[in-house]
Every structure is written in structure tokens, then in C-alpha cells.
Image (tube, rainbow, N blue to C red; front, side, top):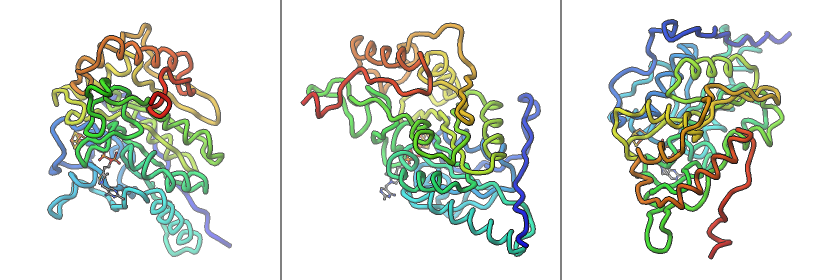
Length: 326
Ligand SMILES: Cc1ncc(C[n+]2csc(CCOP(=O)(O)OP(=O)(O)O)c2C)c(N)n1
Ligand code: SF4
């Protein structure tokens, strides 16, 4: 008879004082000062603990973390191509399942965690991520969202907000607002097309206890889970490196980011402010939006107002794409 595959069981953390002291993402990497994705890695690895295997497609969290034969990862970590983290993670999980069933591996199934940028998750890495979700592998796929292809010099991605100045969307005479498109809705991409997925959530590096608990909850689920984590990038968004956490909090206070969980079809929301501040408060602190006029900011406000009526549920876009307007 096949052996039973036991999974990890991670406890909820009650407060910031109970966050594990152990570090599994240790000093000695080369990310920029104030890097939100690096903070995200630190928190996610604390949450997952040592019985974990992490997979990292090419991006800042590979390149800046693994140069010169050194790495800050105190657990098994595998580099994948930017396109194929979902496929490799599927193989790792399937191999452990078989080894455990055949009695060739005596431990519990390790936590298998993908840490992919927005490009490696919902753009160039989308097909492999979708395959993993569809086949139902017991893997947590995390999209750390720095809202660009950062590693190659801050190019636009489908997660880049409307109006952002990136190296592929520079504002100029013809297109004064820079980026004209609004972002893809990453959690909806996963929820909408993958019946095996029962848990999807959003989190932010500005709210560490909530982030850690969502990672643990996702890992305790059997089957595929997805977390979308807001991870401000001082170099790409052009703000002072010491403000990463306050930028993350301001995103929540203005509705530019919403923390929620989707569990078996039900939504619950966290950290919802009593009253939202205008999005301008958030945008004025980041030089990637410095070229925008009041008219552009009003478009962003309209988009956010529509989204906040039903966070997590897709909204009609207030502007047309470039092909329709050309
Ligand atoms: C197939 C392929 N195309 C392009 C690249 C070049 N490349 C390396 S890192 C990177 C950016 C990755 O962006 P993202 O996944 O959002 O992660 P981030 O760098 O923002 O952390 C790109 C385009 C590559 N390595 N492989
Ligand atoms: S470019 Fe952004 S995501 Fe990349 S290392 Fe620097 S701060 Fe981090």
C-alpha cells in the first residue's frame, strides 16, 4: 500500500512579538537599499521555515541575490528560467509525492514555494504558472509585485500602473501620460480559470503579521495556492529608500492596494481604512508619476473608485487601449 503523504502544519502568528526570530533570508545580498521584494523574501521565508524548498525565476530576486557564488538563502533554493518556474515547481512537488508514497523519503512533503516577479508570474511566466494551478500541484506560487520588469532596467509589465514612467513607457509629446494601459488583475487570472485552486490572497510588505499568516495558511492548504504581494521598489518607483513600508501603507490607505483573501469562493477584506485618501497622496511621493497632469490623476482615481466598489472583482476600464485610440 502506498504511504500517506503528510504535509506541513504551520501555526498562525498572533502578533509581531510572536514572529519567528530565525532568519532564512540572511544578510549578504546585493539588492538596492529599501528593496520591497527583499523584505518580502525575508518575511515569506520566516513564515515558511526550514522545511521548505524555494524556486526563483530570473529577476531581481535571483540576480541581486546570487551573484559571485554567494546567496542569502538558508534553505534549498533553485534558479529557474523566467518562463518556467511553474513547470519546475510542479516537477519538484511531484517527485516528493512519488518518493514519499514509495517509502524512499521518510519526511513530510516540504513546502514548495515559487517566488516570482510580476513578469515571471503573469506575463512571460504565465503559461507555466497556469499549468501548475490547473494540474493541482501542492505548491504556493507567490508573485512579489514590484510593478515592473525591474532587473533589466525597469521596463513596463502587465502589473505596472497606468501613468507610470518606465524605460518602455517614457512620457513624451505623443503619449504624455507614459503608460496608457491599466494593469492585469493577477488574483483574478488565477481564480477565474483554475478549479483546483481554493485559496488566493493579496498581502503587503507594510503589514508583516498578516503577510506571514497568509503564507502559512496557503502552505497548510493541500493543492495550489497563490499570493499576490505588494512590494515597493525604490529604484523603479523613484522614492526615498527609507520609505518602502510607508509607501506600502499609503497604497492601502488610498485604495491603490487592497488586502483580501479568496477562500473557496468567499472574499474577506483586511486593513480597509474607514475613509480612503485621494490617490494623489500616493502618486505624488513617487517620481515615476511626476509627469502626470490633474486629468491623468483623475483617470487613476476613477479606476480606483470603480475597483473599490467590489475589490478583487474585475472592473470596466476607464480608458481605451492604444490600438483603439490610434
Ligand atoms: C526568456 C528570457 N527573456 C528575457 C530575459 C531577461 N530578463 C532577466 S530578468 C528580467 C526581468 C524580470 O522581471 P520580473 O519577473 O518582474 O522580476 P523582477 O526583475 O522585477 O524582480 C528579464 C526580462 C530572460 N532572462 N529570459
Ligand atoms: S530594482 Fe527594485 S526590486 Fe530590484 S533590487 Fe532594486 S529595489 Fe529591489
